[in-house]
Image 1: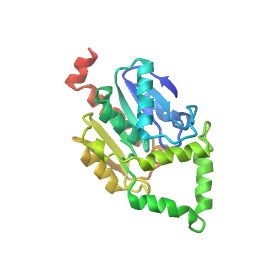
Image 2: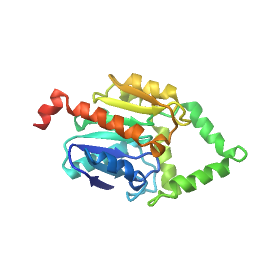
Image 3: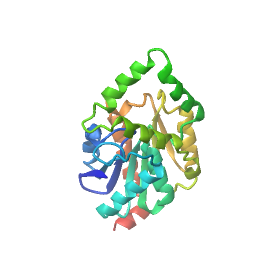
Image 4: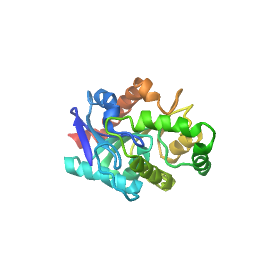
Amino acid sequence: MYYEIHGEGEPLLLLPGWGTEISTVSGLIADLARNYQVIAIDNRGTGRSSRPDIPWTIEQMADDTVGILDATGFRNAHILAISMSTMIALTIAAKYPERVNGMVFHVGFHRIPFLTKIIMTILPHLPGMKKKMEEGMNSMILGQKYPPTRESFRLQGVAVSAFDGREYLGRITAPTLIINCTRDPFVTVKISKELAAGITGARLILADGDHLIARLHPELLVTPVLEFLAEVDAKPERTKEKS
C-alpha cells in the first residue's frame, strides 16, 4: 500500500474516490496539511498501491487502511473519505471505533440502489453513451499520473457494487459530517439523507453542485472540513486524550 504524509498536527486519513490516486487531489492535501498531518492513501487497485488480479472487498480495503495506521504508529485519526471511500471509512468506524476520532464524507454513499445498478449496466449500450463514457474514462481515470488499469478499476467497482453499509450505520459513534450535493447523478439526495439518518448525530450539508464540485470549488469542501474537525478536536474528551 502506498501512502504519503504531509503537514503536522493531528492525523487525518485522506481516502480518494473510485479509481482516483492521491496526486490527483494534491491541492486538497496541501490545503488540509496546513492544519493537520495528512496521511493520503492510494487505495488498493489504483495509484502506486498493489493491483491484485482477483476480486477483493471493501472490508479488505478497510483493513488495508487500518494497517497503514498501524505502520505509521497512529493509534487513531480523523478520516476524510471521498465518494467510494465512504464505504471504507464506515467499515473502519464500525469495526474499529477506537481508531476513528471524527469523519467527513464527501459525495459519499453507503450502498448502490438496485435501480442504479440496472441503469449502470444498461447505460453503455445506449446510442452514443459508450463513446461518451470512454472519453470520460480516458480523461478522468486513465489520464491520471498513476492511473489504475482498466481491470483494477473494474475490480474496485465490483467491491463497491457488492457492499451494503446499512448494517454498519447504527454502529457508528464517531462524530460525522456529510458534504454531498443536490445535483449529483451518482449519489442522490435520497441516498444522502438515508446515510445521514442512519448515523446518530450526523450532520448533512447539501451543496448546490454535482459529484465533481470539489475540483471546481475546493473551498466548499475544505472550509467545512476544517471547521468541523476543529470542533471535534475541541471537545473535552478529545482535549483530555491529547494532553
